[in-house]
Image (spheres, rainbow, N blue to C red):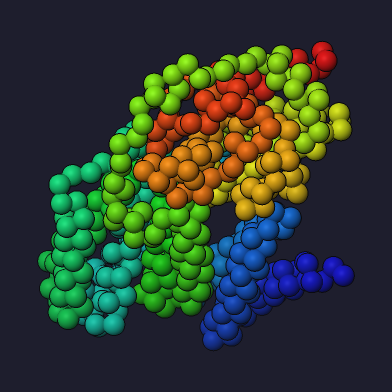
Length: 488
């Protein structure tokens, strides 16, 4: 049955092509507008299929293709609108954007994808906000209250997402401190700025002719975006990225109301709702409330001293010893973390996976929802190394099985395997769900040093009786293990 898989996409793509041909041949503006609307509906349907297929590893590639076809359909439909005349400016923007975007996509390393995503949110939101600014000054002072409300909503979300995404990029790139940047009465100040922006927007909606308030409104929105993100720690960036994605989508949806584009309303609503749902899922994965991430300014309790946790208890190992353990292991679980991504160790990890499989071992990968610096970061990283999707096990699925695992290799992860989150009620990360790797027979942790993770606290796992530390770069460690295994 091919149609349930590819039928809808093929059918609606065909409609788009037919609409384009009919548009070129038709001198009737009303007929042309009808076909453009049909193409827009086709694009919206493709976006829905894209989100559906992106929810599964097995159909994710198909979802990407359908999203791309849907976006191409939306662009085509827009270009054929009767009121579009300045194709020279449009092509100039297309070429400039393509010249920047294509190399950015091709040459950005996998470790920098979170930063690239943050920048994409920033510029997408800025584009939506600038459309609102253009519409305001195009129709000023003859603005209806309904149009002014839409413009205010669009520009508020657009500009706060723009500056907030730049702050997120700065934290991810470590241009800004990854720790929470708190200041006295932080919540009061940030909520006060938001309230001032809302009041200014309300005044503009009631008295649209008061154009002098609009730059003030924009400035307040941009300031709130900065104040919203800087107090959030680097460990919460996966949730923040998803939330900013939601804001960018809602801004685009509001832009659809401003310029009367139904496709933008639908596509923006889809992005906004999916981003918000993902944010809630990420908060649940960290056992934290949504408001706590944004406004809680996580109260960091005093953690145990490093020497008290590690003193005289750390046992180091060598690649040869790890290879000997792997040679006799029947079930192996690999836990990837951001350190693996930084070391660009995904491909050699895939080679280790193949080698162990050939030796008869059952090898799986345990994926924590917030491992890395954005939702799905580890999944994408391992997919790049052609590791089968069915070997990637989510936390809820693998946690009950660690007691039956012979050897766990933790490469570059820290807080997501810290048993203090489960066992120590006074820990700063108490209650955060973790991967229960400490319950395995043997654990090998690959790290450069005993430096803490984003939470800034020591990890008792490293001092556990069944844990061995392999102090090395994430990639070099795996390469050395593979070489030692081939000699066994």
